[in-house]
Picture 1 (cartoon, one colour):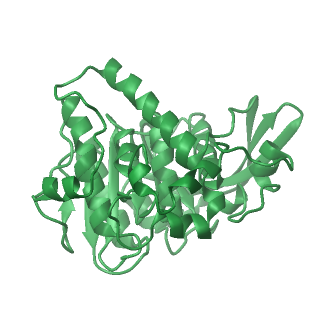
Picture 2 (tube, one colour; picture 1 turned 60 degrees about the horizontal axis):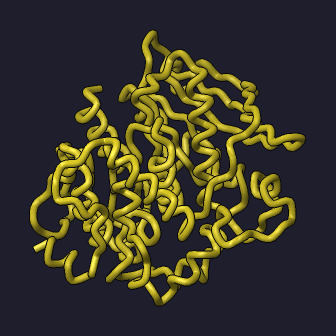
Length: 359
């Protein structure tokens, strides 16, 4: 059934070979895919800074009833004679071990937050390093503030210059740079997570930064986890007309022209292979189109399988409320309700990571 649905949408194959291929062959193809995605959709990320420095601004070692230490940290990037700083917050359980951790790209800086049940996450044995996306650059067409101002300095963007999603992704990798300085984090178990537009950002981050062992997308929909061809709800024309600054200018040419895309969003999921990727959907989030998010997981699975790994383990049907598929290197769940990052979503993420990484 699902193969027929993918065929009806005219979905492109990621890899022409029908046989298991070597990791070197895949890395070459993966590099081509990443260049394609950056050139045609998101733009190329800002350059690596000349220098990075970190300063703890505030500390509370009795957070969450004394179980967690909460720090506010300033991350400063130096580009020649230009400097840019943004804050992140670290919530790390008080214990004598190395903790698996999330880098959470958040809509707000509050801790805890309505999308962010900090105590419960830490009680499950995870640390969280979070930052507010608008502390990096504003969510609008202003390219003169934050990191955007450092990059462009008032100059116009070129066709494949980075949009805001790429800038937020760049910041997530700088938080990972900071994580590497902390002795109580397990760097082999780093997971990037985001919701909605920040779910798109988490997927891009996981694809571009191999230090993340899993990228988690919640309700990321159009230009995120959802296949574009044949999609219900939001399409490229809708998202680009409303949020052109999220993307590079090249993406505009695919408005009402999806059939000429040289890729589709399953390329983004597959570009994370052989590391893990998790997609979460909500039944009533029709604008994001959960069926298209699910089909993207199905289509991306071929890469894992050709590399000799388990891909997406699922029944041959579209998803139902309550479905939880945690057996493969692509994880998925579908919950009831609307566009939201809920406690239920976090608990599914945690269950998947505990299972897959033996935490």
